[in-house]
Image (cartoon, rainbow, N blue to C red; front, side, top):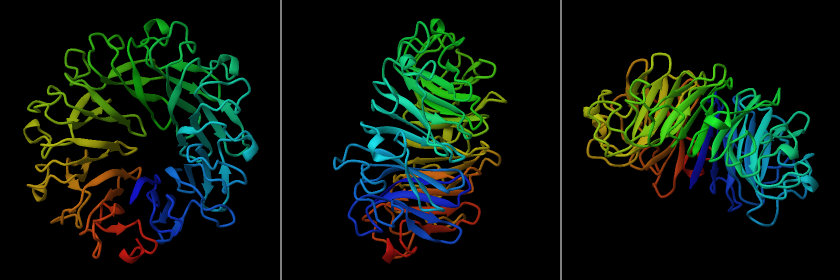
Length: 468
């Protein structure tokens, strides 16, 4: 089965995890150059040897040159990883040179690799930086507990992000995790239970670190101090390309006056303004009356997509299922994505999931088992992939053979991802009819050009069913 798909910003490269396509019997990272159709095994060392242990969680730089992944394999860098399947390290593959770099190491050698497993990891859009979380105690002198680190790939420098002053003495006194990084790598956001990163802090909060100046600010706070921080858990931080805007979810009732239940917020770090995203008009009176989650912010910071069961964001939504919404921060308007015509009367009649938004905020992709969003899906409660064009209002199937008169996928779809302009979409499906000869027994990766409607079978060595 294929899983964990990633696509470069330009849509030219796709990476995924699969047992297939190799003879190793171990999960490997595979890749496809969509321009020339060349398929490759990404998880090879510089000698061309395949990874000798499991590989997971591929992330791709904007141009597709660099691929970040996690693995306990011991043969990417001599002596790295561990025979244990749990001591995952962070590796970067340069697809141009074939070189694999051990990112979770002080000097790139196994002798100084992280002595505890890597948790979350992300790569900057420009491919120059990696951020990750780990409980390792040997990456920064005196550091303990789960901390956030940034690796500069050009010179190998590792910096402690979750610290007031970049030193071990100023490190967070509790767990920090789930970092995200701006496109140029300058800004890093993360969530933490630490109480010493800002005076008076408690609960899980969101912070942003400026790696150029060393300034650490609390995002989930009205005025940037511990005195007005969120009085309940905040999580799910996402950062805009330039690092100015950060979206997050929080159950705090004091970040925005009158707010209750889990809501979506966005903070402008230039002005300090916090906006209530999951509200019909930005006011607490018209906030979502049920929990909202899974926010994603557009690259330009202008729009945010999220999930909610609220019944009051769009008239007519009954709250039986999670719906997909987009908030336009310029107009302060909210729109229902998971609807045949944008109204509550035709909202999805089954749960929606996995929302993503393009960098310019024009396109949204999501998965849903609804049967009422497009006429061709009537009576089908399989999970399908959709793309919504906010400029034209068009809602189309991703998981279909043609842009017009779609032949609906006969297998469940998940993990839809798209290029920065929304033209190219990848997804995972156990379908038989999207490529002749598939039996539907295993999940495959597909790539679609939404302008032409052309679908390619990605998870195959040669693009054929025989090579899957």
